Length: 280
Image 1: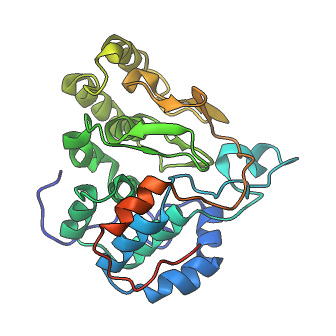
Image 2 (image 1 turned 90 degrees about the vertical axis):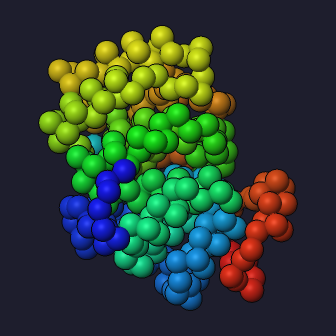
């Protein structure tokens, strides 16, 4: 990762954090963000909130995205119409942005040992706010990280940290939204470095397929096509899910999120700065 001072520069749009406008609007109008998260004043309190509340990494809660009948720019992956209930993860992501994280704090997120979701939101913060030319250096040490989590609202798509980061370096689609585009020169450099870095070590059976995938996605090809659906990067290791495809079109889901019993068990051993859990 970049070896610089503790002040963390922000790349791109400083007002929006480079988030999709519809997602940002829903975050800012969310009662959860305006009331529950407003009460959290410190970095450590927000970390505790991630530990107790985040159970997936989609931008919308299950079942809340209503885009039936919307077409073109008003539906699908672009997320400019329809709206829904913005997810806990994305609300907290923006809350972290309002705290103006330092470099040390961001490193603390991506190396945290209590929950993969704490780490994942740190890596997502990097993807949205850091310069494309610095993304690989931030992610490099974690490209073979095997800690996994369920990234899908409602469950059904297990990814490791390493698989997720490799996808974020090569694709801009993420469920019902898009990450900031990576300029072609930076993308070419990233692809070259990925090839030199080698295949995902968490699943040796897929090493050959990843090599082929990197060749197919060389900078001479369209690296980040705009599509309404995309396949999970099986060439970056096997992704455990009920389907081999993660839809970038709206999911038919409901708002209620259920904590797993194992997560609750872990929560009992966590040192919390909160007096009670907050519900979304």
